[in-house]
Amino acid sequence: MKKSNILCGFIIGVGLFLTGCGNSFDAMPNLTEEESRLIAEYAASILIKHDKNAGKLASDSEIAAADEREATLRANTEALQALLEDETEETSEEGQENSTSEGSAPSEPVAAAFEGIAQFCGLDGFRIEYVGHSICDSYPPADSEELVFAMDATAGNRLLVLQFVAENTTAEDLELNTLDRNIRFRISVNDGEMSNALSTLLLDDLASYKEVVPAGTSVTLVLTREVTEAEAGGVSTISLSLKNESDSVTTLLE
Image 1 (cartoon, helix red, strand yellow):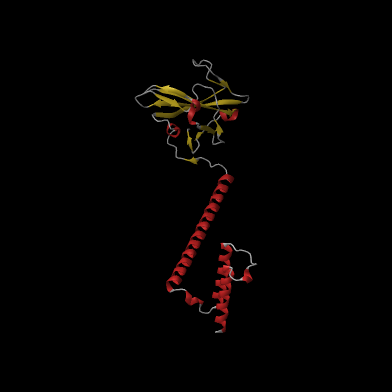
Image 2 (image 1 turned 30 degrees about the horizontal axis):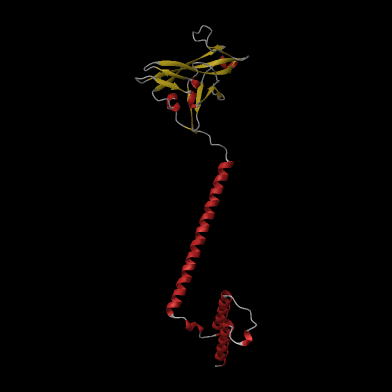
């Protein structure tokens, strides 16, 4: 009973304080609406804290609503935490992928089965076949009718000239264009190391040819490489390697 009297007196005192009633409060400063609200909330919390029957002031529906709000808040918090964790994991994985891609060397072209020079170069309508080789000191020969550009072997070496026939197998004129294919040709002699075919200005260079071939006709093209005098005296095997940005193939010519 004594405790209830104290609480009642506290409530009355707070009410008088907030309304500014009584001469004893004339000297108190005017409170803003926000300050009055904060004081009221503080007073209510004190009362609830000391009143053992405070829990009975809320109805069952109010308690259920409060529980529902708490459950919703908890669920939203857990969902937000899960989303943040997922984003953190994705960022970490992307960083690892970028680090791997930046730190790794460019991938080598994948070796593919040899199906033909024309097929590898993407020259639809053509068939390109190897027909043989020759060893010489200069090419084309001095008696050639198409002596527009000639090349000589360097001292101590000779030229290995590989000869190919490119045939237009269709019934219409087609452009044979290897210049824009960016194919890298390499040649190996006697199972030795692969060496790049020479870059030339020859009009019949297989690596840089770009001319229209009439329907049903063919042209003779070449690839060249220098060989030593010793290699030139005993050529037993010749291998050809072709490589583009994504694939590479190797075939034994002879």
